[in-house]
Image (tube, rainbow, N blue to C red; front, side, top):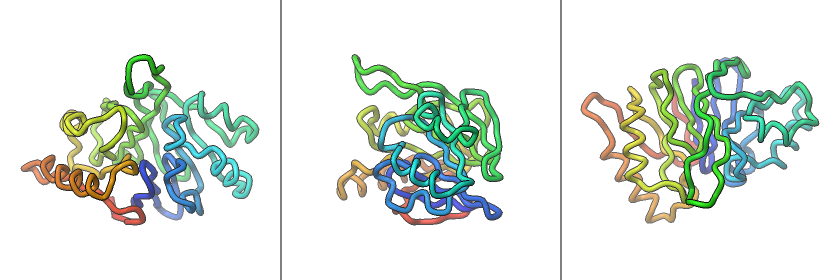
Length: 213
């Protein structure tokens, strides 16, 4: 399976001719949905959900299907059976990828801002995308997509979350579009400190970079 880091919190997975995209938001890049067979959306915030882009892609790609929590899925009701509501504990197959669903709530941004639904996705028992949450899956995941910069997050939280999930192989940084060049360099160095003696390591990929997972 190939993982391609796109803009911000968006990643693309390719396996056996199937293409799965997670969280194509407004900062993901213009071609985030190119060739996609399935889309997973963790929550409704526009940096994770570019609704116009998804509608355009689903209109132009007749086989493209969407999986998301009910608050997101409702925005695409016009696409009928191609849209699937999912929640914590569900399991399904999308574009040939096995997916398990974990978690139900977005992390707290600040007091007074309502907490919205957030759905984490574990793909092929290998990669976990938590969206904007500190959800720890009940099952082990070898590779964690690790949020590194957000209004709801400081790096101490990132480090604590990485330690709690303890992915066997480490992971890759996501949620990084609001970092300055200086901040990107700083976070890249801090990620090195999360590496463990057992060989697990965390790193940041430049958008467009593809790795085997």
